[in-house]
Picture 1: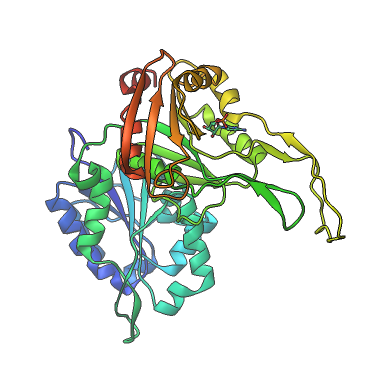
Picture 2 (picture 1 turned 90 degrees about the vertical axis):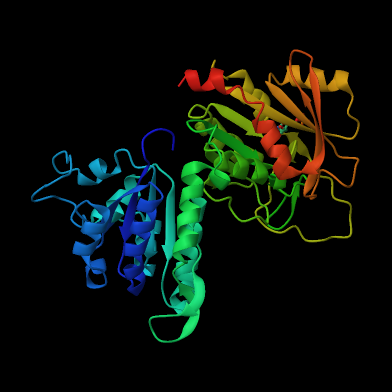
Length: 412
Ligand code: C5P
């Protein structure tokens, strides 16, 4: 949000809460954010289009193909693309159950759904519907799908609903919507977005390697460090892709999430994604071994010992770091019981990383499962730095501070 005033697209769908969108337009305007409105056909029944045109100072678009074009720089039939030009966020408020389902399925049969499918900017939805619809497994599933794609939900509130009942499903308050969107445009609490323009790929959580259909081996990892890195990087303006093994954490808002189970699955996704990112942060606890063969049925107990044969998994970090191009920066993690500087430096160089973040796992107050951490930073030139015990979120920001932005952003 540096320089010119930012621009958002406000998508309005068919919900009784659409009347609140007028207030949203006014409030964004007061905050210096210019708004273009795209409404669905159903929204027309709930919403005074003409008033919205006056409030926003621009025509309200509903049709994919323009018949007459008073003020838009439309390029032929691709009206959704000209609307997206220069936009920094897409906010769908209110987002009806029907529209959320369309987004989850990737349907694009009108202007707003086509915009939603083409947008590469952060997308927010502010659901508004009856409680039964909000809690229906179909709606829950669609919102989960969208969250995994990085769509940010501004949760509805409890209160009177269109049916006259009281319950969960009332569109979030205007102030809440405004501050969530502005936070993304301006960084948290109006702070700067030093990582804008940077694409960061983060691996997180454990990998689990199946022995048979019910048993597995894996590493201990809560995924909290990777989650903290993804949240901090998004807050600071980076576009984040998170590749995570199973954890109990909700997807971090704004990040594109790939959920995987095994090391081989993680390696494939990371290999596919690495080229499109300037930074890789390998915070996952990758299982070093996997069973040589996976049984397709549950092995029955037979009173005898069971010997498992394990094969080594590829070192994903080493493989990717070896293929890194100029303009890419790779950060690895090391979980050690003893932080020996010589060994850490040897690992940093062996893995060809630009920064190795070492955890002391012998300390129960930090590391596995804890919300705190204390780490040693190791650089290939033989320098070391220590970040003393603090929250994983604070540590994440200090690690991100070490990314050489000047070098990376000039290359793109
Ligand atoms: O060799 P070590 O397991 O200590 O290295 C840890 C670092 O290497 C972490 O960044 C981890 O994500 C990564 N790693 C990997 N593939 C493996 C094992 C570890 O990418 N098979």
